[in-house]
Image (cartoon, rainbow, N blue to C red; front, top):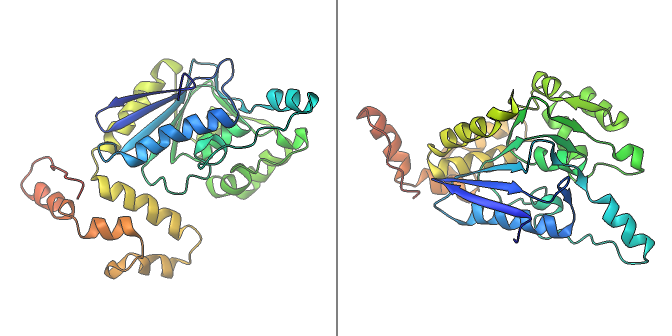
Length: 267
């Protein structure tokens, strides 16, 4: 992954730092480097949750590297668009990632940077951070996840207005609409992200994966069908069936009854 992405393990948490100065712009190489980190999270049974942030306090990610694309076109070169198996930014189309990924947005999340955060499960942000989708003013659509995901995260009219106008949404407003879980001073952001991920990591590993798979599958289902999905152990989701057949499913209630901390085995 070189220097584009730094990873650090803290127990069952994998901290992932996007490091492509000056603004963490996303090109194919960056997408593949980010995906490699997300792949590490997914594939290692010793890891339960990821914490994604950017370097510094100014920019989380400025999105697609338009400068690089424009220079390539001016030189008559093909614009690199091979973002790899996880799609743009390494996670916007990583459908197999069923471990929670938390975004700690340390600054501006613009265009594809906003989409990188949207593809995470929970967003916490520095109180000076902001979110923007300027694609309409560039002759493009924010179709690496914003068009698809944003109307599912905030009220429809709010999402469409942001997509149409390209205006800036400050962290305070993002919290008000529920897009951001919590906004804190920049000096407290990583402490907040770490506290959240460590608490999530206390959950049973298989249950964490099953929850994410269930949430993804039922997103567009009628309530009755969604309720029936998890009844009787016939969900059709491998992670859910593994959870239901696991020793951890017995260990959780037993530990509660015995007034002790559960000893998860991950099977």
